[in-house]
Image 1 (cartoon, one colour):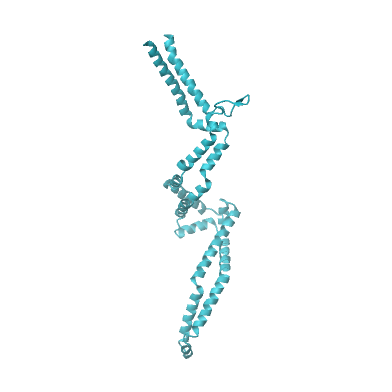
Image 2 (cartoon, rainbow, N blue to C red):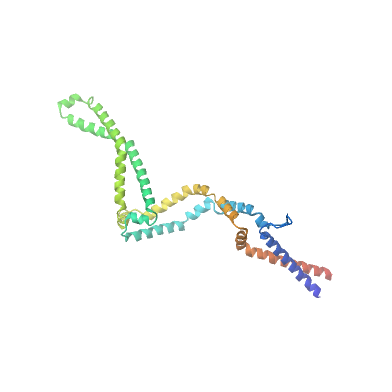
Length: 300
């Protein structure tokens, strides 16, 4: 009777031990073992031996299945994320309403003075170029010459001399005016616009933040909604480019390859410890069941 009882117990122990060893051999030994210059079979363990393949597989899974552009865009542009961003901007605005700091001092709380100055210079350059191009495209000289020609005709129409001249003498003059005005705009307007913008920028930097924030409400400017709009546009347009530059698969792969074998083991066990434990216990159960089958056969 003791022999019949021991058969399933021993089977359970064998099944448990076999699966325990198999699970351990997934990670152990961490490095190959050599005896008299010959590498022992099954060393290093399965995971350490295939760490490179594991790193590539995990990297591809992260980039192609877990953190895809669609998934990240869905998270970043979720209603909750937009609401939190708008609420954050709104809270910042209310805080600045009571602030006595200048705009420059407020901006320097977020970034450095050099970066703020650099952004302002870039903004000034962009606005100068934009306004200058618009002025050139407007053909200011033509507009001025038309007005001058119109005024001259009205004035000369009152005299006999003007009626004798007609338009034959005025039109060449108007063309000269147009050419000179356009030439002046192209030569001097850009510098004038830049100087004006720099002057206004310097004034703006010294304005109290609270006063500037109050202007937002006065002109009914919804800054939180504007920031959310800019944020949404930025994510939609720049996220694919950002992901292509980041190459998440390469980052994950390099990170896993740089890890020590013990760190990889700890990482995987933190994820699969319960499942691996279940496999070991299943080995004991299968061994116990097989032992019962053996006992049943012996009793036949």
